[in-house]
Amino acid sequence: MTDLDFNAVAKQFTEFYYSQFDKDRSQLASLYRDTSMLTFQETQIQGSKGIIEKLVSLPFRKVSHTVTTLDAQPDTRGGVLVLVTGALMVDEEQNPLQYTQVFNLFNEGQSFFVQNDIFKLISL
Amino acid sequence: MTDLDFNAVAKQFTEFYYSQFDKDRSQLASLYRDTSMLTFQETQIQGSKGIIEKLVSLPFRKVSHTVTTLDAQPDTRGGVLVLVTGALMVDEEQNPLQYTQVFNLFNEGQSFFVQNDIFKLISL
Image (cartoon, rainbow over all chains, first blue to last red; front, side, top):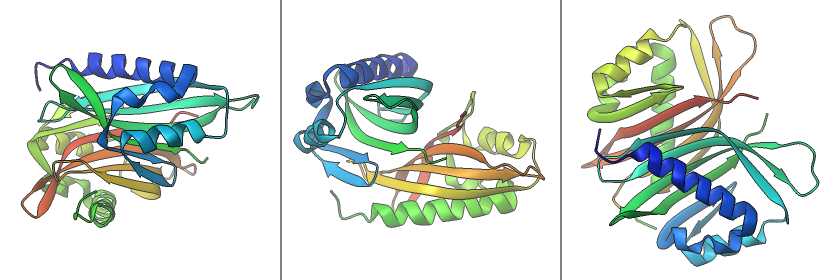
């Protein structure tokens, strides 16, 4: 274990991320770096600019994430791994979509950025 | 990106892991180290010995994993992040359980070990 309060980091990050995503996902760029990678369903993208372009291009206007489970672990290098399962509602769709998402947060002094981000809808 | 064939690493690791898990999960110790962490549902465990004790103690005899999706990304330190969604059947149960699992693989020369492992059943 480490002195890092990784559960608090994960909770704070996740709340900020989904709240900002649902409000205005074009403003998420500060969480990513040029080395960051996003896998969104089948698409893989590297770099903050491309990642935000991808998120903005997603074919829905309204979106709302609900986190069902949130688990975190420290790695041995000051990073925090976060696994989320949840549901999202888009536009006027009545049925929530189940998803899972992992964030690999790397530290940068006292703050964190997203090195890895993999988002998958769960087919039932 | 990197020269590391992270997709091949992820595929090879995942095939070995689930095949060995389903055959004899007491033999998975070589994949973990003393620093490794497992979150299995609500339980968090550190270290190879405790992790294997936990896996062996799970209340089923027969188990079979089927991987539905497998996604991988390199980090910037030679590691590979792997996100799996899948289904598992236990004992004589007729209905598969949906799960998601993330592995954070760290490299050790030419091989890899599991630094982080988070397993969650998906409640529908």
